[in-house]
Image (cartoon, rainbow, N blue to C red; front, side, top):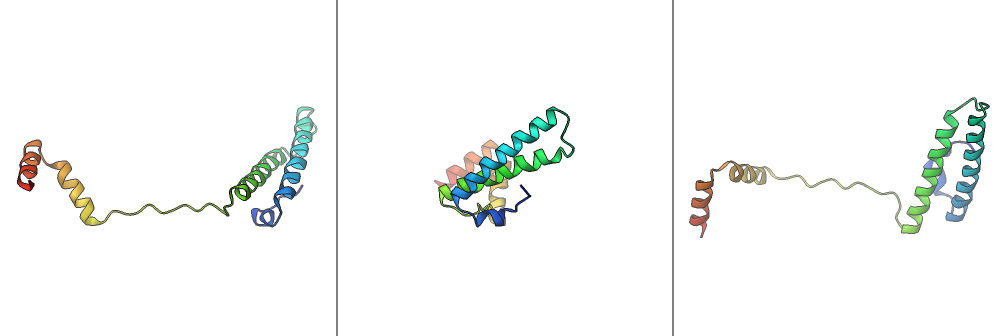
Length: 105
């Protein structure tokens, strides 16, 4: 099998992807036999096949889960005031903390 991009793979149905995984696994087995008998000239094919299998299995899992491509959410940034409040309470001495707490009550 040739290298197929994820966008091309997304166009396929889950059954087509499963068939693709099965054929890729057979190809991987053939490549492993060739490698063990010193007949495999391009060992990078093993790596490419393994990654295509992983890519197809990921897309199958995504379709089962009902999600498209997972997106990373950006962590909320702390405001400068929140940062200052954190650093002020962390640097105070224990006696000063007690005094501030008693004053607040």
